Length: 161
Image 1 (cartoon, rainbow, N blue to C red):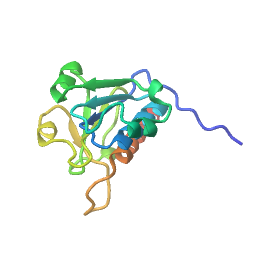
Image 2: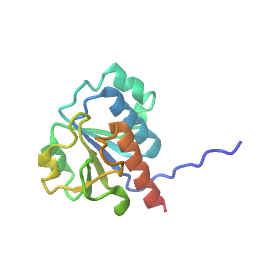
Image 3: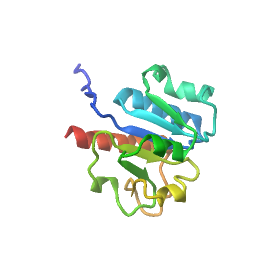
Image 4: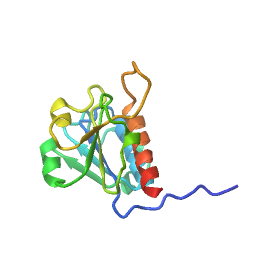
């Protein structure tokens, strides 16, 4: 049996940003994704659950000790602390698709809450580029952890060439 190909670490890893996530297993799944890819995880409050939530811990399994996690009390606190970051604001309603851009190491991939997505003030605030994951017409959206996984691996594919 062939060993699985290893994913080398990036000197400047991607940062996966979840703004006001509401469903603990989705956030746990993203944390697990961060652990296996070396991406950083940022959570922006308010959260729809407690960080100690049993479902959150279960979804992340035993990977939490391998996750670089930063928690911010709000969008502005995150912006203040990450000035100069290149941000991609994922939304189901952007004219630009993720296959049309070039991701770079250190980019921030930003996702909104499960029921609502990113708030209009974030999408229109000039602090990032709106980007969509291509999908069939007349479909509302993808599951948050699925969308984060798709975007992350496309970004990794691009920078690893």
